[in-house]
Length: 148
Image (cartoon, rainbow, N blue to C red; front, top):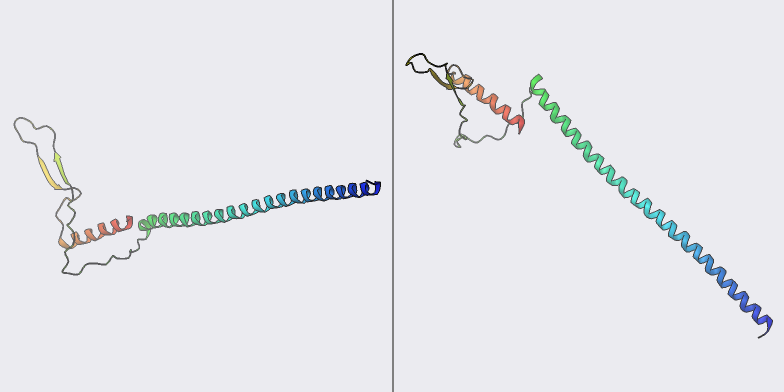
């Protein structure tokens, strides 16, 4: 082997080694660039999730405020709620709600007297006229609808 041939082989080897180092540096740079892009993509996904969650929370807060407002409004200025569809005259309504009976017992009787008892619906001291009873039922129904 001649010295020129040896020099050419060494030169080729050096060129290939330089090319290999250059490729390795490029590979590292590309891998780092990929990691950066993946992190940016993950950030974008998280930002979208945060945005969606904020919107959901805003809707819930808005609904809560509206409900709180509706709870307070009946005390100040009652607004009629939309009436549910009423059955025709041929369809009977559900059973009427009976009011609890209030039993009053006086203190221990003297001697062989019987204790006095009064059986009247709670909160009702006197029987009401039919018009007053209907009005009361309407008010109770309104109260029920406010909560459901």
